[in-house]
Length: 160
Image (tube, rainbow, N blue to C red; front, side, top):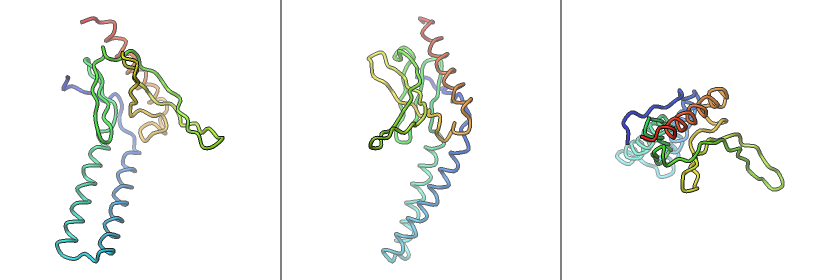
């Protein structure tokens, strides 16, 4: 597929908070592991380097997380895996109001963007109006949703 993927929005400042929180959590895990097992010398360096490498990879994936578009299709980059689809594989783009049940209570979780595939399946995107990119920027969330819909409609109208 395309090499010209574009994320139609700037990442929010919440990503840096998540990365900092993960750094703190892994530093605490490193400290606890070293104290628990009385590590010294090479053992200490191995644990510290291993958890630092986990943090670097995780931070890189968090920075790359999101939905990217190109004239050929859409790319959804998650924390663990990525998924590319051509526009012709997508039947529609819609908002989904997600909720969680906690006993008799239903907790509103905000809107997410879903891609409806031609085969009837749906694909969750990383776009969530209360997520780290859009929590304080609801207008940006709506604009991104409209941009993805517009690109899908343009691709569907062009049979080439």
